[in-house]
Length: 169
Image 1 (cartoon, rainbow, N blue to C red):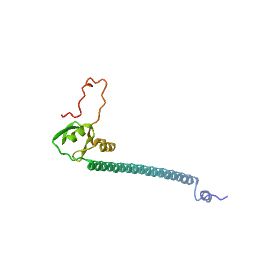
Image 2: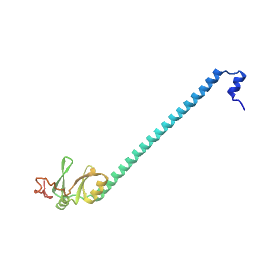
Image 3: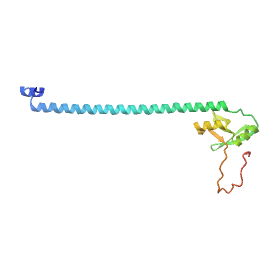
Image 4: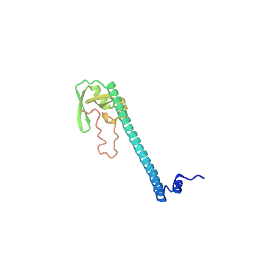
């Protein structure tokens, strides 16, 4: 059987046991260090891949949000009614009371829930309730006012005093 190089050097007297143990220990340390470096590099690569995936998901979500907003703008601009009239229709936008000048037919349709008011650019637009429902599926915050029949609470002491839909305030 062939002897290893280390054994041959020991036999020839060119090396001693101390140097052989030191070389063996050094080789073991180098192998362990290489394994640790390789593991650290792999861990860093995995972290970079995860970060890239997260950024990609964020970008895709932003693109999706922009597409939804573009769809909403298109729906409103295609379906908004031109308002003309001298009747002041009041509605609430959050805690603010706003108004639009409409004609009698539009006011009745708004009161009956056939039309809805939505935010459009820096103003408001009146659109059919069907279109408002489509917009609400995409972004409910755009809908400002939509008349709906409310359920009456059984314990309400004012249940007998129903407020008419066409009440002007």
